Image (cartoon, rainbow, N blue to C red; front, side):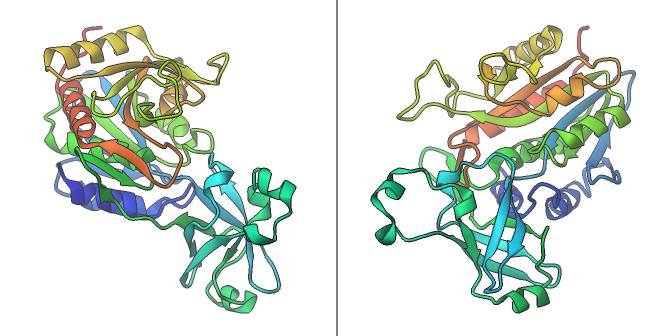
Length: 348
């Protein structure tokens, strides 16, 4: 696999609403792919290849969970809001990059030391509103760097290879999806019009996919994202049955816990077609009903007068942390499945 491309994507900074650096990497990588590349005014990046009677839209989101400056006190300590679903307990001591308009400033998330906490404080969950970012700079120095209310803040983590073909890095949700979409588009000789969309602002409400689907007007929609791999201690198999290394996941349904509201029920024809492609190509795959989240497919299927849609997810341990673990085997399997989808005619 192209590990350096995945590294570039994963180590790029692109919190929700500030995805431009990721788009630059994608545009450069697709420059000689033969695809027609263009952007909309919202920041969504499109790469179009092939022609035919039908249009297949395949989306992967470029944004990552992150933070945004909410307040800077007189001593230069930054209070922040969260962009996307970040568990509070993983925030303390994380290293961050504050993206000032004139200069990017490194910092660390601080909180009261455990030594001076009262006994009841030690037993409580430390919430993000009791944390702050320490850059070492004064308020005046931060202002001279172009840091102000609304400045985006990303997390600093490199990509590392683990044993048994595993990879750990930040923002695998959804740079892993961007990676497989890029690789598939480069390899494929489409039989229909393929429009790959690298969407923005997925983590705060599937915003980029919503408007993209209206612009593309596809006949079929597919989202590429990551999903929860539960093959580790402290999680029951019935709560997360997907495993690393067993192939990409074809999502049957997803949405809110207890009701699957607000999510997607995959179109059975699209889902069946993807399953047939995987089976005919000898590509291992998994099926999933996911409670507790959704993807761009939920927005695509609800646009226009309704678009038959499905989702292919890449198994990932520790989703929505800054050290998400994925498998090279699953990434390659997802690329192969997408190439087959691009090079075939849906039988419906």
